[in-house]
Length: 422
Image (cartoon, rainbow, N blue to C red):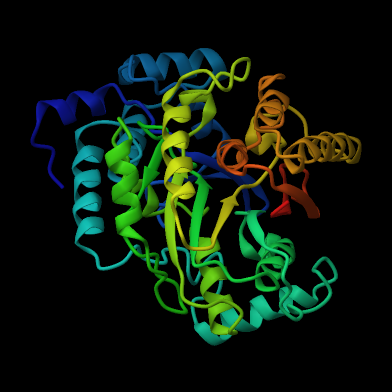
């Protein structure tokens, strides 16, 4: 695509890297780093350690000459001007730089999303099997896994499940823990409306983002309650659909949609509608953990949602797609993950889950944010929202698990928690 605007050219000459996820990978015995874009996760770029340092210098203030000088001062290595320019153009071609080129691509994605009949199952065939039969076999097997609940859902019970915290980690890492959560749902009186609250890994301009699209899955689409979302939008002073495009590539709710449709396929859930809502980071949008009940856009929206739920005649279940701690060099720590660190993380996670199981929204937020979110609890926003909406229900931690990279570069923790009507 030709660069036609001066704005795009200036942005390229003083490059600023967009927010990306950095994943360590090994290629031919060499440590490399994969840049994964939350806007287009299917596209990625693999770079070296020195290139990663260069990326950290791209702050939108330095031009190419200043970038080369800063790199030389830090490494003692001079970059030929042509090499640096070629690398920056490669980043620009991959839409990884802020500026006019990315804005044009974003407009294209937004138009395509709004024109599509469904929110596409974008992670099918990657994070989980894209063919219905293979996917069903995999989900069946998670119930029987050594870390799973020991068997498929049992007979229905009368105990009403009102909320779940489920993982949003890739199914091949967290499938058995998902199975604990969704077996609990399958054994409860079936909900007719499910409010899905998920972490948004990409930055949001607003605290919450809904979508009017039905979530598609390999088992078929899961219908969204557009009228319910319209009621929320009418009662909320913010724009609930301003960040709707964030749903396009976000996995936190896609994996929940897959499990809900799976339970329908195996005839453990009846017809239902969902209300998909992504939650922005509390580091950006609050609320303040020292005064979590103080007036704020977060509190305002949750009050609107609570009032709408109070008037809802259908049986409702809240589901938070939320992982817990993220530690190790991949997430910014200096040293590889150790068994001692994992034990400490486990103790802190379980103490946090005990507060969440008690339904204490303010206490949960203080626990996470009081130390500056040292463990990087990426599910803090949807779990806090769920706890604010719960009422008097109390929870049971069904399963806690840790996934650890064999090289110690990263560890992610997650859990399944079920809340029953008191």
